[in-house]
Figure 1 (cartoon, helix red, strand yellow):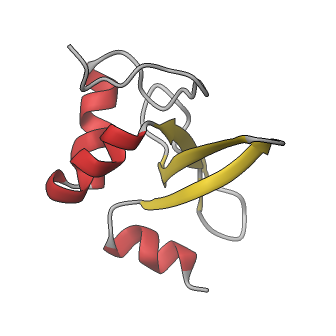
Figure 2: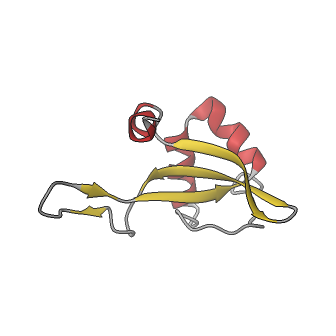
Length: 95
């Protein structure tokens, strides 16, 4: 599927309609971990980077389409949310 290549080429991936309960769906932004999370480890056979799936809101997804996934992640970090997920979290774009 080339997920790692796509992640690198597009500065993250977005998956819509991830079912988390019978009638509950979320959108996730998959990206490389950023500090303060561990970025990865170096096992004997190479590098292992940590990927994080962060729940985002509908308007955050629409916003990054014009501004980029990396820019949204920067805004999440600046807002103190970072790569922490809340299923019913408020959008950082709402005042």
